[in-house]
Image (cartoon, rainbow, N blue to C red; front, top):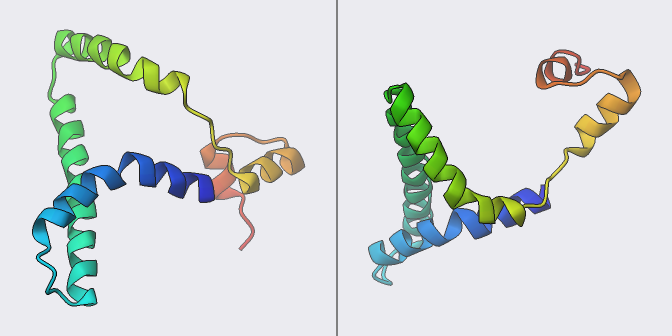
Length: 110
């Protein structure tokens, strides 16, 4: 979880922080500041959700072109990415021999 939060800080926070700073004037209470931060985080993820919906509207050629462009843009980032494994999932795989999200979710103890 710590690694996920660290990645959140480096990927999402810079975008959210600039918007939050632009909305603050220094006289807000802590509750208002937290509400603004929450709104900006929701706005960030809503923007990406809208982006995904637009992608779904692409035709086959547009998706191919877009994928090629994104691959070229993301490749340098992907080369520096450190995979994060869920220790609970790793334990599940070791104990049961089953893999996959469906198996993991459906076979959790209640």
